[in-house]
Amino acid sequence: VAGNNKLLKELNQATILELIRVNKAISKADIASITGLSPNATGMITLNLINDDFLYVSGIGESSGGRKPDLLSLKPNSYYSMGVDIDTDRIRFALIDITGQIIYRSRIAVNCVGNYKATFEIINSEIKKNYKDKLLGVGFAIAGQVDAKSETIISAPNLKWKNINILDVISIDVPVFLENESITSSIYENWSGICQGVQNFICINSKSGIGAGIFINGKIYKGASGSAGEVGHIIVDIGGPKCECGSNGCLETYSSSLRLAEKLNVGSINEVILLARSGNQFALDALKQSALYIGVVISGLVNTLNPEKIVLGKQFVKYADLIIDEIKDVVNNKALPMPASNVEIVVSEEGEQSSVLGAAILPLINIFSTNEKRAAVGI
Ligand SMILES: [Zn+2]
Picture 1 (cartoon, protein in one colour):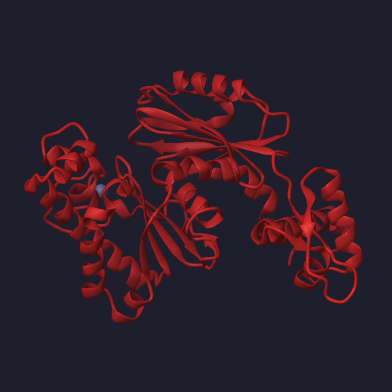
Picture 2 (cartoon, rainbow, N blue to C red; picture 1 turned 90 degrees about the vertical axis):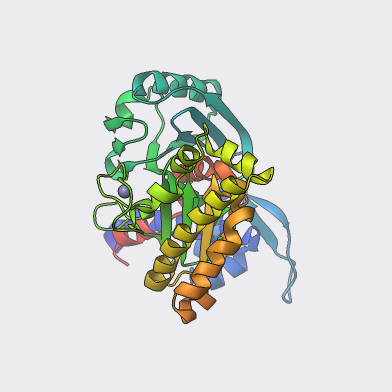
């Protein structure tokens, strides 16, 4: 460990920043007692972080005998991070500061399908327009398979994009980060949303397809080759209709927004929801029927992974009130009683914005996360 002073310093900094992030405001004495760092080391590290503008004194705490202690918090409007969420027909942007506070969001309607060069021209100009000096990085959320380590979009079927290295198409000199959009949604829920402090949860998102971001023991679960979470291709009917993936009877063939719109012969899921809300029984039945299949898949996840929470996100948020009782009924009746009684099925409060906000958190994780730094130091 002695030869790893720089890494150890980064680990101690990250440990303290993460503790302050989770606690919002905390005294140096509490930081020292929770982390096991000496009061001296804690004082040095926090002083450096104050000088570097990461921290500030946000208030005065309760005295435990002596002088009332200063409380330290992350400094608002000091460092920034940007998220970009690329969808088939629009690009979403969000700029946040290190406290997670949203500075601005925007949305640009554009057809991104098969057109990555034009898409990235728009992205480059939007980032330049909103550039901040202390921009820690730009995070991207993509509906598809990505290799986060090499910043490569392996395959985004709905965008018809393949093997695109973000570094080749981005013209701004900042660190870039890339992740699947269901994973960025789950990161958002864990940092700022309804899964703060929750160790085991699954976010199930409906967009053009259906995907999931999975947290196990407080960490993102990606599987052996990074494709974990493709719950839309869990087969719910072995004799069912043909799916985009080549198989048949996948959850998506019964419950995706695209298939529901097709079934009702309308242009989009929004129209299906509108019909259902205005009393069209056929539309309402189609949504409720789709919920049974979602419930079956959730039952399987509950039996396999025993999560504390299942979060319905993205387009599900628009009509979750119409189907959540059906989903809960299926889970209560079909999943094993013990895990079923320990899971809460909830609706994201952010709706379609969760993945762009999660993308904006990606560059911050690099600074706050202790996992990789621990591995580097070997503890
Ligand atoms: Zn499929």
